[in-house]
Length: 160
Image 1 (cartoon, rainbow, N blue to C red):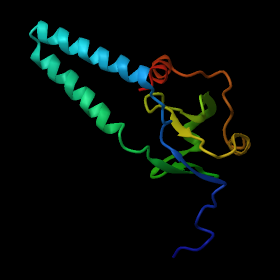
Image 2 (image 1 turned 180 degrees about the horizontal axis):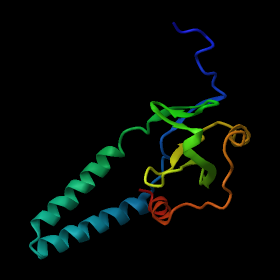
Image 3 (image 1 turned 90 degrees about the horizontal axis):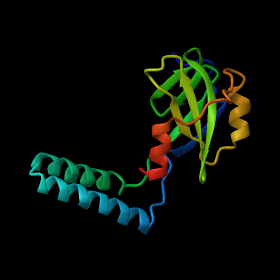
Image 4 (image 1 turned 90 degrees about the vertical axis):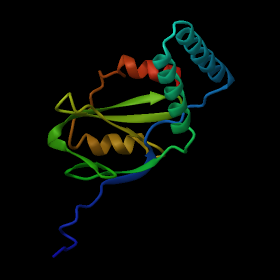
């Protein structure tokens, strides 16, 4: 039997995109099309048809995936942990949190105690960062010395 005392009470709840929507201008489009054209030209001249196929398929899949709208997820923080749609992390598995400020967005990173699992990366959306910070510091420490991984920095700069 479910009673109201069995259901945990959310401390914070919000909806946000699963990743930031990058604005790709004409320069980005021309640059990427030029790179793809050069790679295809090189693979054709080298007679590497399998490489040509991979390049064309990669470009088509990338274009197709990024044509649809960015999905929104519901993020809920409880006393027991955090839930993003159906994925959950309990506080015992979390070593801490930190924020990344990007152009027009903020990301909350929750570090998992097992490095192979990786961080939970959560867009803050319209939720107040100070509210998130004050709620999370009750359960896990803020890791102020953390920085974005180099590969993620490269991906963000390239807007991919």
